[in-house]
Image (cartoon, rainbow, N blue to C red; front, side, top):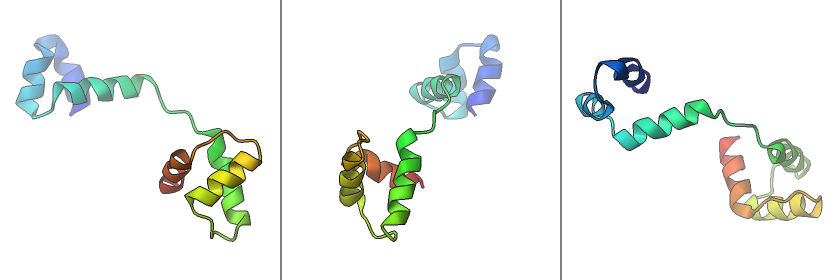
Length: 87
């Protein structure tokens, strides 16, 4: 939908195209911004996988965060939880 709106944006205002296709304007502009800045893989993610595997896949986010911090990786518990969910 967002690509369609981008293609058709020369033919009319974006707000009308969004309303016609049932897409919020904020969602359209957010998707366009995300497309311009591709995500960079987190360096802590690979380290997290190694520590998690070394623990026998038993550590939770709190213990993993403590283990990563002990190794010198600056990462919080909620970031660890997000990385675990992604992987």
